[in-house]
Length: 171
Image (cartoon, rainbow, N blue to C red; front, side):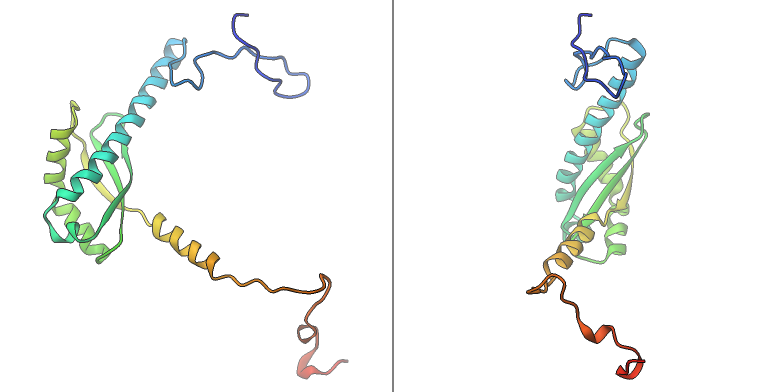
């Protein structure tokens, strides 16, 4: 064939042709595959752009519950029809409920600013979801940093106090 051969997948497997379109950010030749690829590729780009714009817009919100909370947008997920978007965020300061209320009350302004900055046919309706992954990662990191390692001189050495029976008497 015209395409290079892929490595063998297993014993007795025939090498398959590898399309040069794979992994290069370009679309495949099959028309139905191309539509699926392009739709997912476009959605991924829109998700990234919404995330970037949301991070910028949240700095301009005047609501003190949002402005003072130091909010980070961790992800944005837009539906295929672009009608709805889930915005995942984390915050460093403030009460979680108050931050959520502040975001909900300013969602109209945020959506308006998103419509001005992005050239989409439909501006998605925004839903804000708390993402605790940053706090969880910081907690795991602190647990790892606080570990202490015992240095044993001999690898087979054990503590005799844990092998005894009740009241320290052997039967």
